[in-house]
Length: 141
Image (cartoon, rainbow, N blue to C red; front, side, top):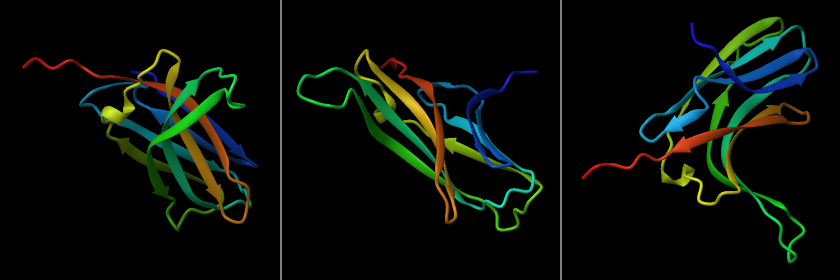
């Protein structure tokens, strides 16, 4: 039995949203596969949709900038929550993100991040994130 890797865990009142991936280390040609687990124990909050964002984070110091961390979006995926999702329910949303050359980090101080954003209807959006890696394999010609 393999272990699941929790990448993010978001608590919204009595509701929890956890993003789990099969492996946070993705190789070229393989998709990033995972699931989002929603547990609702009677929360009054309603999820409008969930967004997965892959971004590159560059940590740097520059005397010419006030920003030491710069995020650049690589790709996004939106997941709709089924209309029948009510209080005291569990729900699983599966996802698949297919990497391409944009996922390759180019600098030593650059990281690849998977961010989960839970958009709450008429409320404050919540997010959490964790680092993933992408390895571009050299192909023989």
